Amino acid sequence: MEKHFGKLSRGCALCFVGKKSVLFVTGICPRNCIYCPISPERKNKDVVYINELKTKNTKNILQEINLSNSSGVGITGGDPLSKLSLTISLIKKFKKEFGKSFHIHLYTSLNLLDDKSIKKLQKSGLDELRIHPDLFDRKNWGKLNLMSKKFKEVGIEIPVLPKYEKGIIDLIEFAKNKVDFFNLNELEYAINKEKIYAEKKWKVHQNYGVAGSEKLAKKILNSFKKLRIHYCSARFKDSVQFRERLKQRAKKVAKKFDKITSDGLLVHGAVSGEKNKLIEYRKQSPVSISSSMFSVLPKSQRKSEEFREVKKELIKMKKPFFYDDKKSRIIFGIDTAKKLAKKFKGIFITEEYPTSDSQEVYKEVLS
Image (cartoon, rainbow, N blue to C red; front, side, top):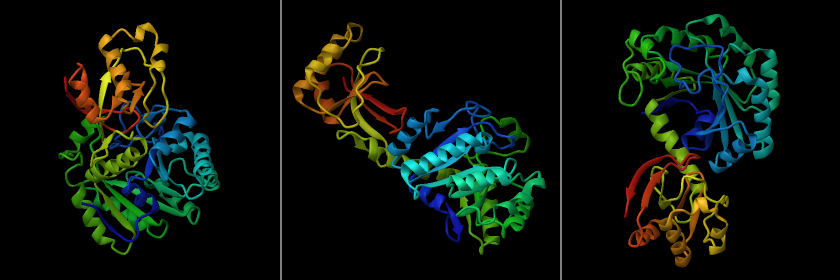
């Protein structure tokens, strides 16, 4: 259950309704927090992800934001300031492409913040800065004085570590007149920190949050009711924020024949082709393709007699369908799939994420 006092930051308000894309600009970070949840595939790696898509291509990043129907971006890492030039150039690009009202917030530690980096971030058009101070090393806390009136909003966002109540309260007391808001996050399970979690006896419950974190967070919130302070659970991040973002993307990428579930997943019929890629067909809306399109397919991609016959039948039926080149298949409506299943083998219905990788969560073979 979420809880907060005072007005939510603009970044949080947009996340709540799934209108924020997540830009993981680098896995490189000057710190090595004992609770860092970043996966081994990303941690300390110079990689870029926009939502679930791994890419360093700016065009792909802009396209993913557009397909996700986002009104803003949250920039994270690693520490985005480890790649300051890239981060600055992307912020400027977002503002130019989507307009000044496109909201951008950024997460960073205090380690790399100084007058120079703050000035560059300020000039880039960054709206909201979220700082993650080190609870175990207070030497950089004084840098919070540098942020005064530099951005529309400045906040502190930290995980709530069980049995570290004093350190968190000390930080809030120190920073309450220096920042605009506080976000307390439930401590999440970190797949690459199992040994440390075991040493500290941090037990993980079924929602991937650490036992005791939520209880302590709510206790601290009740002690600072006059501040703008918010608690966000691991459950909320996974089941609400992520789901709402899926719904936004589903609205934008769904074909006319797709069924969108209450969780934002796409359901449609499909038939798989050869492992070789199908003819590239990039239009976003489904259309019926003329038979002449199939004649340009190389023979190596027309080995399956059954698959060819399904394609012919789809043209004959004049039902909308779509080439999914990434998964070497053709997709179509559920009703179309049921009709095809009466005549052909290999027809199935699939339920999958509306993300760039179309991750499948359910499959039912009809024939």
